[in-house]
Length: 364
Image 1 (cartoon, rainbow, N blue to C red):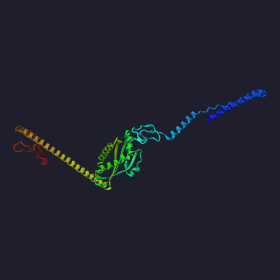
Image 2: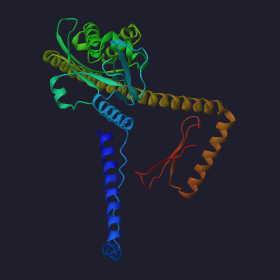
Image 3: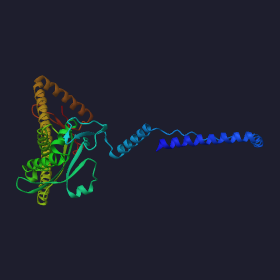
Image 4: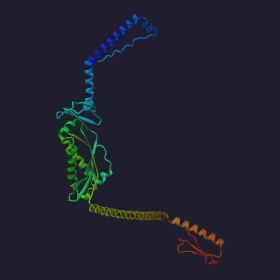
C-alpha cells in the first residue's frame, strides 16, 4: 500500500542517518581516519524525500480517469449541424421542441437524439435510363417514372421532380406521427395518385400541348393534400413536369398531324400571299384608272373653259392674225396658192407650188 511504502522509506532514512552518526563518532575517536576523511572532503549523500499523494487525491484521479473513459466510449452528446434540427427522445417519448444547431447532451440508455435534415429535398420520378445517367445528389429520392392510363386506356409514362422540405418547427410531431421514413408515406404515394388522376383525364395526343396546364393542376392538388395534413409537416417548393413519354403509335400520329398542319400553314401562307399580290395589282390598276379619270376630267374641264372663253370678237381677231401670217407668207413666196375654207374661221392651208411634197399647216 502507498502509506506503508512511505513509512518504510522514512524508517530507512532514519536508519541511514543513525548509521552515519555512529560512523562519524568512531572516526573522531580514531584520529587518523578522521584526518583522512577531512582531507578528502567526503560528505554523506542525502536521500530524496518522495511525497506520495494521499488516498483522497488518488481516488479523485481514478474517478476523473473513469469519467473520461466513459465519456469517450458512451459519447453522451450530439452535434446538430446547420440545416438540421434535433429530436430528443426520452424513454420513447418525443420532445415537442426541436433542437437547434449546436451541441446537445443526453443521458445514454435513457435518452437519444436524432438529427433530421430540413434542407430542400428532391423526389425524382424518372425512367431507368435517365436514373442511371444522372448522378445521385445528396437529399434526392429516386423513384420509377409514373405509369398512367389516359382517358382512352393508352399507357403513358410521366417523369417529374418534386422539391420539398420539412417544416423545422413541426419536425418532432412529424417524426412521431409518420416515422423517419415519412417521405415514403407523405410524398411518394400522394404524388403518384395525383399524377394518375390528372393525366388520366386527358387523351394521350393532347398531353404535349397541355403540358403547362397539367403541371399547374398537379401542383395545385398536391399543395391541397399537404396543407390538409395535421401540423402541415411538409412545405412544397415546386413541381417540374420533365417528360411525358407517349406510345409509339400516338407519337407517329402526332408527327403526321404536325406535318399536315405545317403543309396547311404553308398553303394558307401561299394563298394569303397570292391574295395580297392580287390586291396590290387591283389597287395599282384602280390607281391608274382613277388617275386617267382625273386627267380626263381635268381635260374636259379645260375644254369647257376654253369653249366658254370663245366669242365672236375673239374669233375675228384670231382670223385677222392668221390672215396677216398669210400675207407675210405671200411676200416671201409669190408662187404659193392659197385655199380658204368656207366661212374663213377655220385654219387656212397654203401649198408651195415648187415642192408638191412639202405642206405646212398654219393653225391659230
